[in-house]
Amino acid sequence: MHSPVLVLKDSLKRESGTKVHHANIQASKAVADIIRTTLGPRSMLKMLLDASGGIVVTNDGNAILRELDVAHPAAKSMIELSRTQDEEVGDGTTSVIVLAGEMLHVAEEFIDKNYHPTVICRAYNKALEDAVAVLDKIAMAIDTNDRATMLGLVKSCIGTKFTSQFGDLIADLAIDATTTVGVDLGQGLREVDIKKCIKVEKVPGGQLEDSRVLKGVMFNKDVVAPGKMRRKIVNPRIILLDSPLEYKKGENQTNAELVKEEDWGVLLKMEEEYIENLCMQILKFKPDLVITEKGLSDLACHYLSKAGVSAIRRLRKTDNNRIAKACGAVIVNRPDELQESDVGTGAGLFEVKKIGDEFFAFIVDCKDPKACTVLLRGASKDLLNEVERNLQDAMSVARNIIKNPKLVPGGGATELTVSATLKQKSSSIEGIEKWPYEAAAIAFEAIPRTLAQNCGVNVIRTMTALQGKHANGENAWIGIDGNTGAISDMKERKIWDAYNVKAQTFKTAIEAACMLLRIDDIVSGIKKKQAPGSGQTPSKPQIETEADADSEQILPD
Image 1: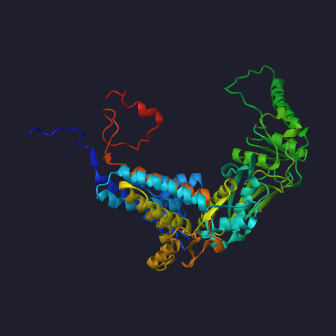
Image 2: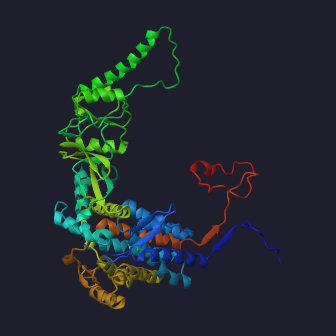
Image 3: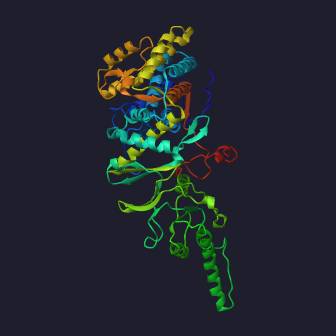
């Protein structure tokens, strides 16, 4: 016999073959089980303790998985899924994981029967194409200007969230905010930039009912000299600056030798005159409010307040951009370049109010604001965080509808229709791919099944009844009413989902399942080469950047 050849180092652990598939499937199912109970209106909340000891109470799939620290590589890629879903469409983060977990679960028996993973993947991809085709067939277009429909839609999307007990409140906020900042790109396309244009200000205190969308912006700042400057200005002329209103110090250290004593006075005078010039350039335009992102010296403050101009300093860049969008001003980098067109006149009211124990500046009643602030009030910080997460979801849904005004039925009806159609089609598929295709069809039923489980009805009876209704691919709108668990028509109940949320969910889930099935080898325990003398104890986990990815080989051992 030959002596065995060692190829891999001892420290490496290599698993291959079916063992890996089983491990991956188990891991993915574990992740899916964690958030399975957060699907649907009767969903449970999860309480997570994060590293710093804070609490997160939520049932947003993405928020939960974001906090989890997972060891298994397959589980990590499952968590990535919900993140992509959140960034792409903002809703359906839970369903994506549940669906992907189910897809892998049904694939398990084929792996046991020694099917080749690529065969399963091929069947899954075919199923995906057909599923999207079914979606196109049952989608119905809506008019985005019809407020009632939009409300119903956003409500059914956040009906599964914690704030559903406040009914229309969050839905109203979301629709107001997104319709305000929508920008027409022409050709009937609308672009809504949630991240840049909509700011959510959370102010603890008060009641949730006090939350509202401002026709303008607010930020957590007070005027520079509270006693002297006006705190309420109607129809203000606003100038936004990106430059400091104080004397410029030299870039590097400058030494000036003074011979005569008077020169010292001259120097000071020059500084004062410089600032006075700056202020005069600004005051030429008779503004009522000057806002700068940088500092504002006492002297400049004095000149401005003498002219009856309120000033706000050190504002965040993002806030400044929002103000510019709201009141139509242009942010100016140097005061001497100001033009009349840069002055913002779109705002109806500037006011500083005290909320709780902090001062907030409001620039509201704008004529045609392209940015807005959503003011959230609530009893506790945890509550506010959760409301904000729900609001994000709601706004994403509203944005999706504005971009692509098509609806599909919610409440598991879409999945059941897809499932029924795929089951019918599977009989016409030839060869070995037929069985995985059919399994994929069955996997789609995970969503309605989970909904039924979460309402606490008899799952088997409900599912059989639903399958019967959907058997021949018609009555596409019959699904589960998530509150009662009764089988009902989704059109009457106004339970809808956005078309591109559903399509994205299916795509992400199936593609991820295929990717995980294709893994047949896990090699773990790869260590970076260590510099001599550094010992075996890395002080902190190394984070690879692109720069040191290629430089590994070059280092002398």
